[in-house]
Image 1 (cartoon, rainbow, N blue to C red):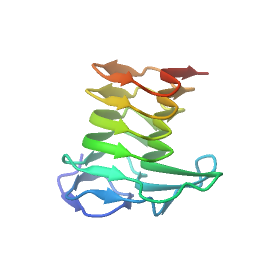
Image 2: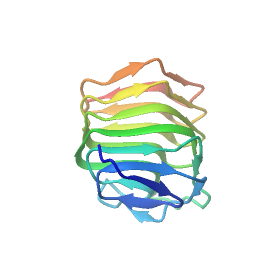
Image 3: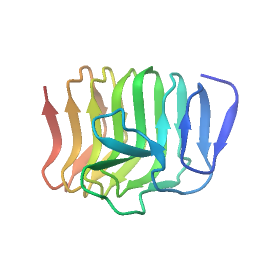
Image 4: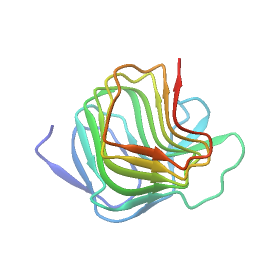
Length: 171
């Protein structure tokens, strides 16, 4: 991990390794994420390996409308990256997927609260993910979706009061 600590005051795309500390609540999803599956947008898009993203007790909230066919992500780990930690998020709310992990390996979600999204955490083609002290609840569909992912460690975390499933395993 990098020595330099960067303060985050708004939604952004992270393309360099290092430690990033959120210093205020973030709103929206202005960053293009169309490379996922659908036209998509993210608030925090992490596109680099060896990153620590510390929400520092602040929220990440979507505050707009959700047109049909468009997806919105609070935090997106995207594209052949490794060793990313997202931690200390008080609330990630009102997105299609609160956290979307795509093709990202050996990463960690720690001390994160995800609520009032369509899906809390969506993990696709990601191996050796650790989910620690995390809660995903009150999402309209699933608390956690694991899709074509192996070696996920869940300790101690809770997925409850979601519309469909606490944990959904797909192959």
